[in-house]
Length: 481
Image 1 (spheres, rainbow, N blue to C red):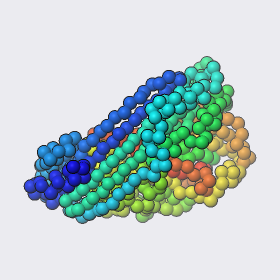
Image 2 (image 1 turned 30 degrees about the vertical axis):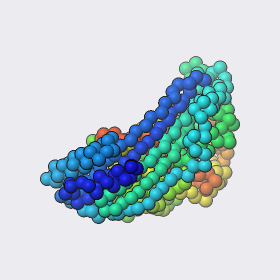
Image 3 (image 1 turned 90 degrees about the horizontal axis):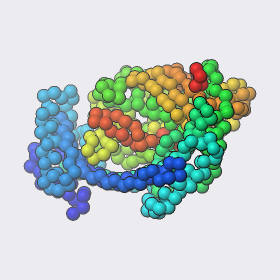
Image 4 (image 1 turned 90 degrees about the vertical axis):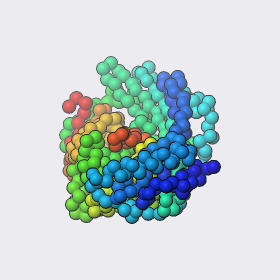
């Protein structure tokens, strides 16, 4: 019997007097292969499989997970979830109805040109070792590393009111980087940050046609950073590459717009938000050049899907349009509690976690300037690439980020190399200072598997895409500051 048939049978045969029952089953195979200093470091494969049962009874939801996809295992989980819902009833803060779980039917599959079996383990390991060799461009190199991670995820969602969803994800993440040293000076350089190149698809995502050129460039840039000047300390125009905009969007837009944080649900662990419920439809979050979308429809982006983990259909929506805050990152439950618009973003990291409000693909839409045009209008500034460090307060208001690589901008030209570049600001100040947005030719998408949130913790996949952006009068500083 198929997994879907087992789930449907469990719902059809239960005698639990619930108002609604949903079961989300997941099977995930993950592989991790890595090398360091030209030697294999890890080669392993894991398989996890199970189901999360969700029950609505007396106006409350209850949950129970099981790794026993048998009639007895599923029935026991349904009973436990039902008892959880009944136990929650006296303490409920909101009365839920079946309106929060409409019937949905559909499928989704990641676009993959080359399947994840196109490279054998031996071929992949050999590739990672060769990348380490390509990065080892000097005696000043003290460490090289390369890694590739794949995930194949099948999920099924069925419910007592006829929902039937099957989604299949094929995911590839890659990394390579180098650490160099000259005396007390240590620098690092990588291909867009650790596993920043995380996408949906197959082995067409890695290696790409620019692999060897990129590896040699990264090695050479790292060596050059050893002799570079420190980033100056001043308020100036800051230009950020898309791989740093990824983190900027994630930390200062994605997390503060999560509705459960605004409600206070995450305050104990992940923190809250400076955004207030009354801000939706009113707050000018940034300059009029700022257009942010929640878009799980982008082909190949890391967190694309057709339905969230409660079955809500996922659509492209503006979160911020022309700088004004329109909607948040919140599930049907959070939308109902706050009375504000949200999106289909109830997501779980695995079968043994209930879905909570999570960002997915949160993107900054392109503007109309080429990279040359963005730089040409700047008399003095600093251009930065690739995140190295980050710090932001638990209200997502004040932050400080560091990057791997920077160039000084003088009279509309990129000039000398700078090391240890950092910048700091507050979220409203920063986004109101947005003065230039690159066009589609400057736009790039990245992702990360490591967005953490929730108790118990859930590390989930997110995607971010952005063009190059310029921000006026931002405080930058170097490692000596």
